[in-house]
Amino acid sequence: MRQKIIKGRPRTSMAGAEMTKPAISYLNLTGRLTLLLLLGLGSGAGTYANAQELRDLFRQVKSSVVTVRTIKREITSQSKNEVVIVPGVGAGVLISAEGKVMTAAHVVHAVDRVIVEFTEGREIPAQVIASVITADVALLKLDWVPTDAVVARLGDSDQAEVGDQVFVIGAPYGLNRTLTVGHLSARYTHKNLVGGLRAVEMLQTDAAVNKGNSGGPMFNMKGEVIGIVSNLISRSGGFEGLGFAVTSNLARRLLLEQTTYWSGLEGIIIAGKIARIFNVPQEAGLLVQRIAKGSPAEYLGLRGGSTRATISDVDILVGGDIILTVAGYEISGDGTDFNKIHARLSALRPGSQLIVKALRGGKIIELSAEVAKM
Image (cartoon, rainbow, N blue to C red; front, side, top):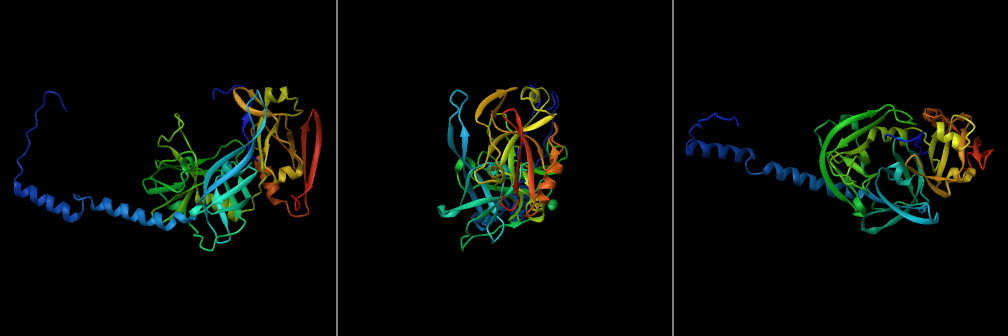
């Protein structure tokens, strides 16, 4: 489940010194230039070799990178509150011959339809099969796989070091398979994310990342995927040298080695004074924003928001359900309960019943569904 928290208004030449230059004979200068040329330093040969290597790597891996196009329903401005269809764009990378595509969770988590576009414009429908919104990674499954599909190799991100050259391929502003190059600038481990499931490992890069790069792969100079692009930090709205990617090792653990559910629900935690305004009968609740069409949350019967409003300078949707408990676990104000909820939902097996209590129209309701049917 995707969540934010609202508790109230956020405050989210040395002067006077002479240097005598030593005389350098023409012979000595010529000798130095000859040495530089032999070493490939004075001629730019090293730069050319790097460029050629990068060009060859790009040719090898570019067909494994896909453009992820989405469609979702959105409520317009507060004055109209009309439902419109909104297209979205991101990127992804094919990581298995069975048609599994890694991307960013925020690109696909609460959308109604996903289309994956390969080279030469081939479009293939895909389904979300796993999504961890707090780590911002998701896994898609293609409805069918092209016979000439190129599968990328997942590398060991633990071996990546600050200073390593990396490159990113994505669809910034819809420009498919755009290459940007930079270095690994830093590594971070976020241990205290609100609603976090576990520590989230991030790679920082100065390779340009813009809107549309989300979900695209970060490659090392072996042509291996070592990260999935997540976000950027910017004051201007454009790239300012601070791009971030979730490590490939974390993405592998969450999406391929563990059981991870996809809810198709996007929500905001409301607590304290805001919760009291909504008459929430406990410390906090999860105000449902959007429900993806065909998702488990829709099958369960949950309802998303219907009217736009601004609360504590945050634009949200109101009128939807406020979730109180999931599988017996009560929603808390700091989101720490999501560890337990995630573990519980991931452990559910076919035949199990999922029960959710929610506040709807001032009344507490109970919704339940069989996991297999969800």
